[in-house]
Image: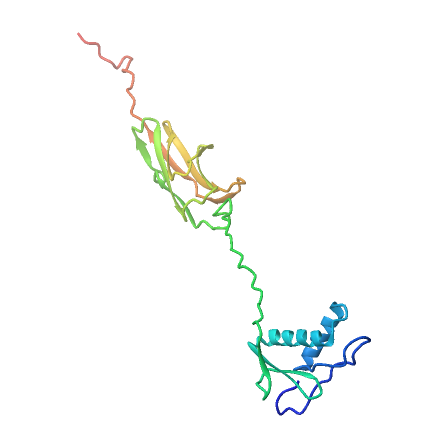
Length: 224
């Protein structure tokens, strides 16, 4: 690099056929490498042109705003990033770096938002276990507690005496239960009908009042 007080100049390779004898010097060894690469990419540029290209590349690589140019008594062109007596400042453009546009991150919710979630609780809250219910009219309200809430794409089922009923997302459902003993269960399935959680079975009883037939037989006294 030809700089003030350095006392050292890196020579340029010997000029080729037909090139001018006047040569330029490079600020750094790296600049000389840029020149060789540029020479291989172009068709025999002049020495003066190549020196200018090298200076520009060095300025860009260093992001220098100003370079200083001077010609010595032998006609050799010199460049430096420091002011030298008799040099001429040359404004160089700052290297334009390439910045790729930031790609937005698109979060697509899964079809089944709770497919990887774990349910912790599914418990029948009504009717109570071993409850005896009277005058139900043949309909019993069945309810459950589910934690966490029912996920998208999941189905809550009630099963009464082996008959399955879709709750359609509700935690409570009225089910037909005539007089007698009944067994109630509940469970949650995913979109593939895989069971995610199931409740313990619960037994309850329904009793209905009835009007007995009037007694008959010898014990019945006939009115007089």
